[in-house]
Length: 365
Image (cartoon, rainbow, N blue to C red; front, side, top):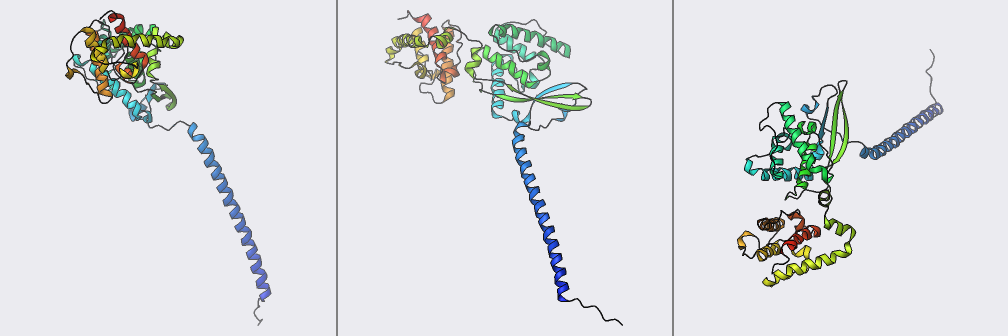
């Protein structure tokens, strides 16, 4: 019977050292791989951070917006733009304006997209603003009849806007297709052309998503559209008059014009022991303008018709709008300047209004 082998401490020690050496190597390899992965992950994260802003924001399409025929294309404003406060304000201001214009027609617009696409409301709006009558059917039920009416309305709009060089950024198909961006482009142009007594929010842009179905798949592209710029720039498309020339090419003569108008208004306001030294600031609340109209037309204006000490933007706009009504009652055309611009200290608008008064009443004592 053979005796069992006995492992000496030396042999065991050598075996343990080999095992430890293997584990150390293995551990070092794992650590290096882990560090390499961390570096790669960090580099990838940095790459994504750089490229992310350049990629379009993912959009969520409503189910009804995906029901397209082959090669059919649909345009819509993306969700983020629809939730922008300035975009929401723009729609509200325009809806309120339309309802104010059409109050006697007993028409109430709640949705630009659903209430204006068939041409019915646009017809009434244009007829009221332009004081004209369009040769179209009053009631249109079929899609063909709606498009015919809408085309007639838009042709009239284009006839009005073409001389001012306003870009036509809508089509009959876009309006009838309930393209909100196209409808807004149209309404902004009408509001500017007819000097609507509203204040449109400036620099409103939206991201428009164009969805097209090809070979059964939906393909999207993105376009940023500017709905409004500054009021001055938009109004400039329609109002190129002597004051534009004065401001652009002869600013040295501006002080002469201001001095003449100050002399004119003080000639009358001095009767109430009032004096003007700064046209843009002292007429901004509308009080002096209302009082001046009473003096020029030689009548007393009851104090309950306007705010003698207006507080806030709306009360100032009320005063200037009331003064404009007095001017029209006196035989003057409705001022092209907007009350909101005068309240906002727009000198050119203030000069336009005062100069119209000067040309009619300069000989009034």
